[in-house]
Image 1 (tube, rainbow over the protein chains, first blue to last red):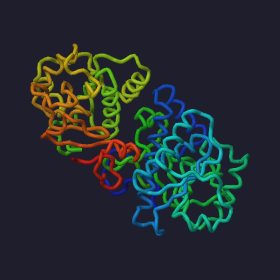
Image 2: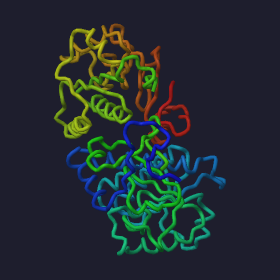
Image 3: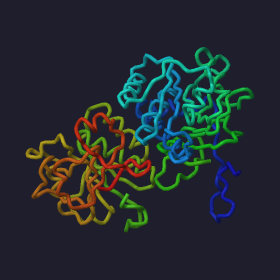
Image 4: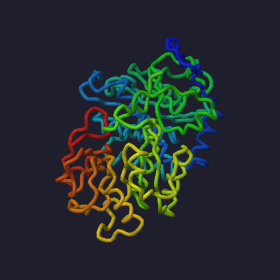
Length: 249
Length: 191
């Protein structure tokens, strides 16, 4: 499968440069610029990413394709930005008539994170108080798991409880896992040898280096990145179809 | 949506976005930014900028997308007709006092009543009372109602969209909104 943006058949005057995969530092630098120089708000970015994630889920797992009686989805949210994105994703999935359930063991005290939590609670999205260690319970109850635990800023060599325990459970589930931005437990720049194995990866804004050899369904989601940043970091993002905010790589 | 690239008559997909000082204007700024991502060429006229920091952030986001900001709006209507395919009216929203429209908005409304290119209004056509259609106001071709339509739109005869798919079910029930079913994963629907 041609992951790079080659246009071999088309007689275009310019060569299409390959899509950039970001290092941890580049991903952090871009986000800093967006907040500091471009004056995007954190809430604004998280909403854009969360909504795009939800749309990617509907593309990868349309309602009609779900095998269980109810369109149930388990969304596991970490304490930081990746978790907030998961909360927003869950809320939009609820608007799209999925039935998300959230497991959100450690809530950030950050007020923005709490706002996203309240928004989900007021949508009647259930929050689990604990995650069953009996994997079959998860397999039976949900059609898929959305992994919004650890993002590019996480230190994957130093994963604390409860996330290390959750990762053990996730490695055993039989239902598909869709990871937000970086599969939890993976290093941003290296695929993990022993980590979880998601079926779907939803890269936000630009893919990270660890995704270069990702063999599952890979989406690029979030269509808002100013052209100047795209040029500065030579991202060579593909053309999104029509007015879609996501594209399958 | 009704103005897809293919449908725009001019050489460039130019759009004039007129932004007011309050929330309706901020929505216009965000709309312009997304249109730029969709490869339209918006130009913004934003005469009075709110000092509110959120509003300023939206302005910077647009500036950093290289979206031009006009320093004045031509009163010569033909210049507008020639330069742009359509006008997006994001001047005055439901909170505005339409009986008491001050400059520069009263002047802009005079100009808008004369343009020949289509106008698309955000939430409430500027100058209309929220609950009554205006007898003498602008006549947009398209109305994009946000969240739920306002009373003044009941007899709107143009293309009417309901946009923004996020409203919690509890609020929908509480206010008996009876919103239509959005198609698929669309966040808007034509009424």
